[in-house]
Image (cartoon, rainbow, N blue to C red):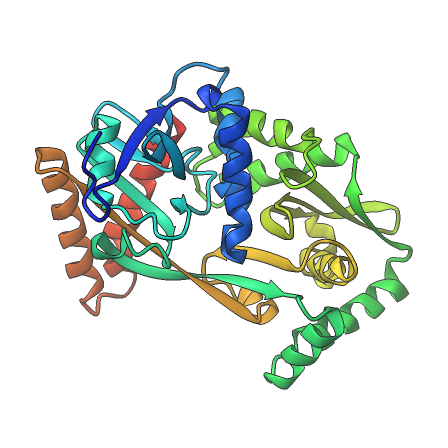
Length: 369
């Protein structure tokens, strides 16, 4: 597609992930080093490749929108295009979206839908720094980050200076566990396949017990996790962390990695150890372990949870919305957001959140297909 508004020199070329050349992948990975927020496994070219493998290599609409100038790539973004709409690649397992570009490669987000052959692109958790998408945002949120750029001790001191007692509380819980459930064994970068499978058993049981959608029933999300667990890439893939108490598996985390970022992804724990908050103790062990490693950011992702607020010393803005061409599909999405905003503006308690929850659930189901 030619003549993108914002920079008339740029075109959008669309290709499947497996059609990317090694040079394209290398350029994309190099772009990730431009900004700390871009050092996310979800913004890596290896993410859509892993999703496509997990989906059996079939054409499920995974696409790469590549900004080009005179045939030279200047920006990359992965998406999933259906017959009418597009969304995040690997949704609902994907926590961030962004178009990664070279400096000065400005584009008009409205060009994406026609280039993909769809009427509408629905984005969620788009990095708020993405100026091209800001005019089409329908709401914002924030992701929570523990920044250990100055080391663990400086991070812990920042939390104490902010009046947050989480570090002190976790240290007390660990001492209690050491007295009552010793030995306490933390294992980073675990290769324990049984622990990995146990994590997803617990996670699925939790989803079912709380009335949420068992996303792993679709098959490919679990295949994706297994693929990432086996990834040999130093700056992309999955890392398993475990915490044993009294010889038993008390907490299990499976997080994704970038070059310098660990992204919190899947967590579960044995309820028998609830009094020690083993999941939080495991996060604390990971934060201490990161000191002196290549990792200086633990990204908890979007979602307003107390433990994220207390463990984080930085935030990152994200936004959700849609952009498209005039069409019934675009009008329907606009109307849905209108109902959602009207409900959220009313003092109806939980009822006000129902339209938003319904939209998110529909998007989740769309992504799992």
